[in-house]
Length: 311
Image (cartoon, rainbow, N blue to C red; front, top):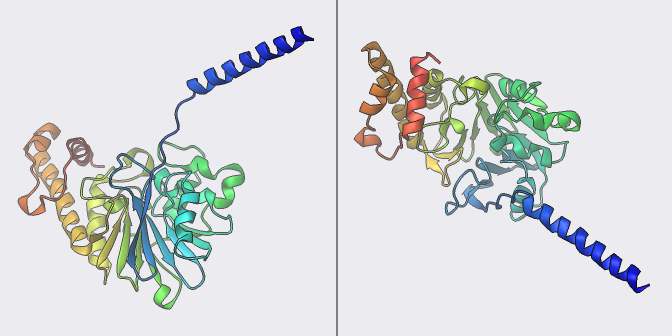
């Protein structure tokens, strides 16, 4: 009997050792990012990241809008943060999430869609709906998230150029002005709050990531789309940007259009003069009046190269 017990103990020790060894070999989970809730206006909030943390963190900024009938969200961050979003919403209202608007298809803006009720009305531009429905998914596209049983999370409502959701003080206007970051970037205006969510058409005060290869974005059309948005969206004071940790103001968007289009113009002029991409990048300097914008060298190189390539 003692021998059986000893063998059992030895066996258990061996199993535990194996489990410990296997756990040690598994990659560590990414640390959870802290979410910070900012009140933007009456019934409107921005759920952003902690500026003390670095990297992608939870993904893009989420707008939380309280309507008479429920909560409307703009963007849902990276997959895994759905419950965090719901926990933050519970701090301000018991109302359920009834609507999700995605500014575009990328995983850091639509990843949490599948963590909400499948009765939620998901609203996107028609090009974004096509991206989400693709059979094969390239990096950042996120269409794999909506296959199989999760196909119920494919958008239920789409638009082409303009759409208004809800009524009266709850009115939310959706605009599409053309290709840019992707081919389906939606601009969302909370009319009564005079606030615009730009998604990654204005992520922060720096040059954008352009998903030209897989998202059908365009460096050339990005600048034109910015101009159309500045000219075509009325009565906005506050900007909820795609990734900036604080809200911005309308003049920041106007200046961003000037900043970005200045780089496109410099690239076109340099190419016409026989300069190389490297010549243009090396000679470019941010104008003094736009010095709060960052022309990060790697992104500057990408933008100029795309312009040279006619993309």
